[in-house]
Length: 195
Image (cartoon, rainbow, N blue to C red; front, side, top):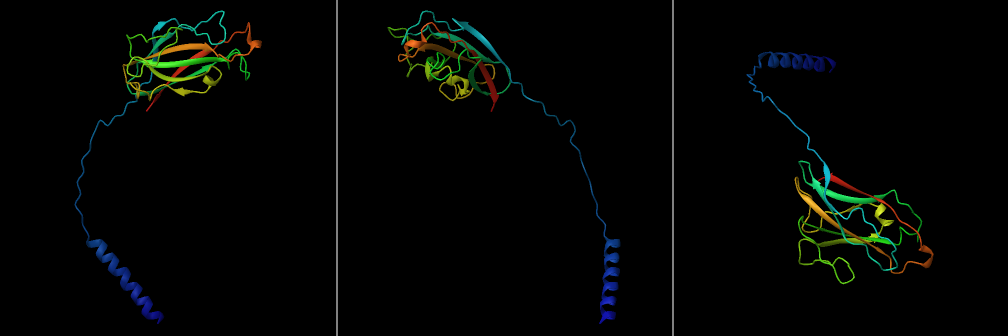
C-alpha cells in the first residue's frame, strides 16, 4: 500500500511539472496617467452686519432688543451645514441672567428685512422666504451647538452663498427680581461642516 501511495505521489508531481512547463499565456497592459485628487475648501466669513453685537440696556422682564442681522458667507467650494453656539458666557449658573436671556434666531436671504410687531418682536414669516423662524432658547442653552441649516430656504449653505441670520434677545418674562442689575455677555461662534 505504501508503494502505491508513493507511486501515485510521484505521478502527481511529474504531471504537475509537465502541465506547468507547457502552459503559456499572452498578456498586455495599459496605464492611465495623471490621476489626481484635490481637497475642497471650507471657509466662512461675516457680511452685512447690522446692529451686532446685540445690545440691550435697562431691560426688564419681557423686553426685547432690536433685531440684529449677520450674513454668513460660504467662501468655500462645497455645500455646508451651518451651526452656531455660544461660548465665553459671563454667567453659567442655572436660573442666572444668561439662563433668563432668550435668544431667537431667524434665517433668510440677503437684502430683505424681517417684519416686527408693535412690541418690536420679529414676526415669523411663514410665507416669506426672508424670515424663517429657527429656534428660541436661553443663551445658556446656546452653549450647545445648534444647526441653522435644514430650514427653508436653506437646506444647506451652498458655496458662494450668504445665509442671513436675524437675531433678537428677550429678557424672560418670568425673570426673577434678583436678576436686577446683572449682565449677560457671550460670544457667538458659527461653524461650517462639509456635508
